[in-house]
Amino acid sequence: MATLPPVLAENLIPYLIAAVAGFGASAVNAVAGGGTLISFPTLMALGLPDRVANATNAVALWPGSATGALGFHKYFGETKSQLKALLPPTIIGSVLGSVLLVQTTEKVFKVAVPALILLATLLLAFQGKIKQAAERGDFKLKPWQVAVLQFLVSLYGGYFGAGMGIMMLAIMTLYEGLDLHRLNGLKNWLAVVINFGASVVLLSQRLVDIKFAGAVMVGALFGGYVSAKFAQKISSEKLRIGIVVYGLVMVGYMVWRAAVEK
Image 1 (tube, rainbow, N blue to C red):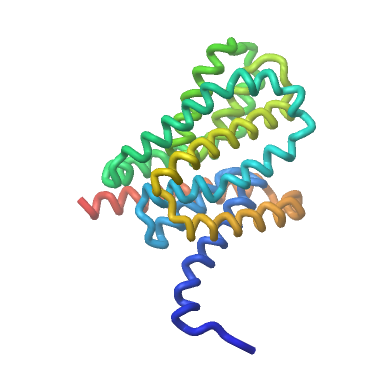
Image 2 (cartoon, helix red, strand yellow; image 1 turned 120 degrees about the horizontal axis):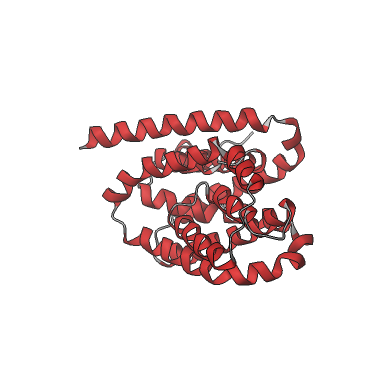
């Protein structure tokens, strides 16, 4: 059986690791959320600068958002008016967030990363309570308030992105007139817009490693397909706890790394 030359095999290993990370991120997103906490640190561990790893990860996982939105296509007509109203703040926020990322120096972003990952980890840890609190509340946001909050979430999504789905769902739950399935559909379509807007800016500014993005994307597509078949056999609660613990470990490591590099 033919084998790859040692040099070629060695060069392929980082991309195979990136593909596995994309597979895991997509599968985790389908079951519990928080997949970025797998793929983003992996890209950093493979040697990409923090900003480039973040931008590459955002572009690579974009197809997963699109396929997730298509899963709610039957509700598109019923959420079209809300989607139309929220498109302007979403587009503006995502573009400004990605421009902010481009303007941020590597040194500053490296300091910000532990806080961003901690925020995403805490959002994942309290995901259930956030949803329950929003569902129980009698308070409903006015359309302009939803637009402002959606702009802020989109700004965050364009800059970093991990946990933005949880933020949006909490906001959408306080949006009067839609049930959870339709809110999920609206949230997924808006996530596609955020990721697409950010991807256009980040690609145009050459902040994305195309090869690693392609590897993660291929893995993510397979991960989404496989997880669709086996998601119901996995305990989403146990997986969520595992990702939270992993996220906290990553925060500790990055704080330690920042301290050592000073």
